[in-house]
Length: 109
Picture 1 (cartoon, helix red, strand yellow):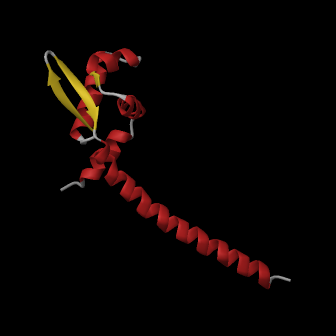
Picture 2: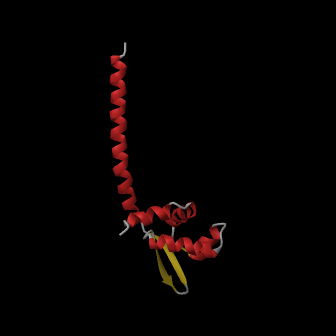
Picture 3: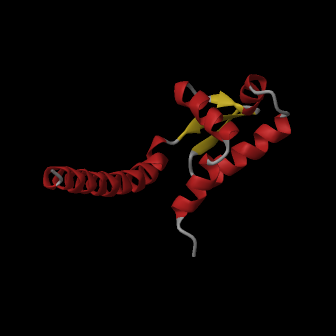
């Protein structure tokens, strides 16, 4: 069974979807409002919204005949946690490498 974070990373891999999320970070919007903000067809925006919704990054609610899209900030927490885990790991490794290189420099006359 695939890890849910895989869907989040797949959704975030596309620059248009990241731009849609950035737009939704400032305020909710309808698909039509989002389509007007991007140089792609409304159908393409709809496909991107489906991917974002499937990944849990946005929700869509019906208001009269419109469906408002809203970002789900908590969905990015899994990505943040994953990235932080590896950031710490690489930071420790770079620190160890830096210490090793300093020690080598001290040993070299």
